[in-house]
Image 1 (tube, rainbow, N blue to C red):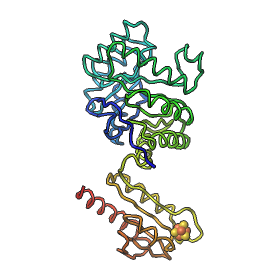
Image 2 (cartoon, protein in one colour; image 1 turned 90 degrees about the horizontal axis):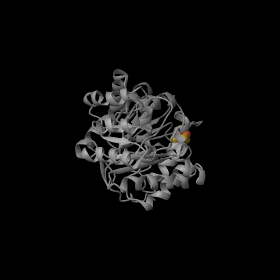
Image 3 (cartoon, rainbow, N blue to C red; image 1 turned 60 degrees about the vertical axis):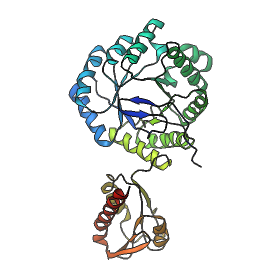
Image 4 (cartoon, rainbow, N blue to C red; image 1 turned 180 degrees about the vertical axis):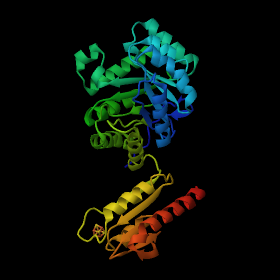
Length: 357
Ligand code: SF4
């Protein structure tokens, strides 16, 4: 059963609410050198077009930090500056971006932590404490190793460093590179604080591996009511991260958006080129945001039964096929015409439903 979401504190990254009852925003990260304005802007545009809600940029040098102002003027996306160790970069970034990702324990003295917290308070921007199992503070690494317990203790330590200065505009991530530690860390910390959680599996690998790890870890957490914003890390194309995150939100039952697709497996009764047909259908319906249950069936055996659960279905037959809408046969046409007609009918239905919402 889908658990209710944990009641977390709501913060804002730019104009995007995170936590509370807000829609769960999808994040990603550019991979260009941030000071390369042209390349970074191109990646921001790609991510925005794909549907990212928030984007993070790595800030390694003063040049990167200084480029943020220009980049901010070139995009409407909320931006997060990702900084390790150098508090001076955090101070430059805090003047322009919408959130800083930094671990307070990594930036030196308490005075430095206070300076960064004060800079973020001045612009009312949050800090994301980003605990990563591969870079725990020495004391936690020595005591617990790279375990979920070590990650939780590191998060509590970093939270306290900010809270000691009255700073509570916080979100937290606890990323491990495997499913078990990721779930254990987020689940273990959840009852201890009310800050929103940014979910992710770190270094999740190529598309295939990330799909499995991210779906298992994030899917389970989301179904348990944990998670206020997500990123699916993929060694691959930026757009794939957004597509995967959307699908996880949809199939975990946390967000209703776009096409839920049912299609036949390979089966001896299939009487047409179903594999090619489904590729076309999937691609052409990618843009639809209205929630619709769509079935693509290889023969008439289960088509009518399946179609009862679908908003709209297609069933292939012997050189002919049927389009079934809300349980009723709408068209019976030759196979070479049916895919285009089906796409048209789905788009029409999405438009009708969109107007009703
Ligand atoms: S609907 Fe037909 S083609 Fe599809 S899995 Fe069932 S029997 Fe096979």
